Length: 422
Image (cartoon, rainbow, N blue to C red; front, side, top):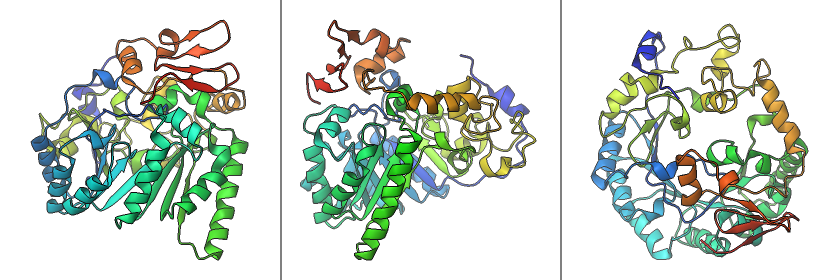
């Protein structure tokens, strides 16, 4: 895979005025106790370099704040594994950020929540895999995950934080959307993001097993709207946010509200990205260890590459809608066509739109007997080595079961049994 170097970038016209990095996502680590098969982390995360130090992260925060960044998200992996998280929160608070912790809740305690509050953390978002304990634990790769999440969600609320829950929905849990909402009501949640899986990273690898049908999505959205009306009539202020995948649209979303316009992601090893998935692209992205945030945002090849529209091919170049969607997602175009300059296949005008239509058709098929590639160190090392865990890390037994690389089994009847917990 050839990197698009500075020569190409310098040939592009950079006349478009870009914005400032208002939203900084700090991916503190790729370490995580769970194995979610829809994780947005790179497939080959196990091959990434060492993590930034406390001092290096604080320098990133300071520089980004000077550039205008106002909101800071602590993410991962699981950011709780960083023992300096309280210090990072405190420094961010001193700099004037609004801070958000995005966590699975695994490893969190009431004492640490109190420490985060004392350090100045503004917001905690706890993620769930499902409302059903068995499905939640199957997807998380941990027999203890669901009960721990319930405990922590209640503790977050008890300590004065708004309860913000995130449920990633997909083929395995979207039909339980009503029960998911009921659980959120029982927990007295304030905000709930019902986020249909976005197909990047591990989710793209597992798309055939995760993508719901159009009928499933329509039913889930209808039920969500019914609950909104019901809860409003009852005076319940809970907010339900329903996020759909663009696989069932005819026009793509604008990539991160514009490439290099608002969002800045810094990965555990210091690589700076215009979005959290961009590392997959054949572009050499800068590192905060080598360049300042100012130079990265304004001068680097990686951040300038897709600014403006000079890079566009047809049909995007002459399209009267290009200012609305900016050609769609560059990562999605690259994953599905092999060409990061191509029109996003979601677009009905794209010559590759048939790939989206094929994915919709595949979603109608029964995928219960297919093994899922779980996000863990073993599978990631295989990706980093250039092999695929579903081929090399699983075995189909005579009884029709699949023994997976993470120690679990995907049985012939669609059920899964875990040989170990995370």
